[in-house]
Length: 160
Image (cartoon, rainbow, N blue to C red):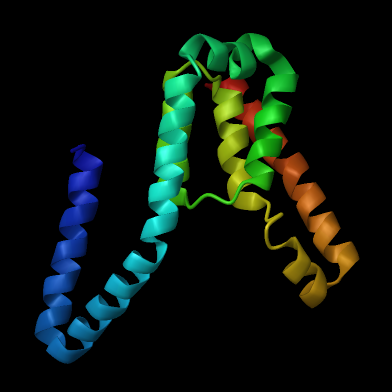
């Protein structure tokens, strides 16, 4: 376990202990809600983990490097950015996946494009966003978010 993970987990346990002493009933209730939420998303998380594992198992690092490495240029960044914009993956899974892609040869810019489009663009929620905020707003927000995500990823590629 990394030192960052140890610190975050330690703070979570400390917060739980403090909460328990301040109000045992509320803490138990919160843990029950958290447990229900965990088991509700667990099947989706397991499916995504299996699919990511299969993808990384069947697609060799040389192919990932060819598709999304530094030599893939803007096309690789656009391709993985489009994938990030379309996919609906929880951050809990997305960050380790991005790390695996990076370790397999994806460029910094491509990895950043994947993460930023995944978190900034909501194509899965687009129908709801259109209904609530209007078509023009939703499409403009998602389009500008895609351009901003690409700018961020290209800058990260230059800096790192």
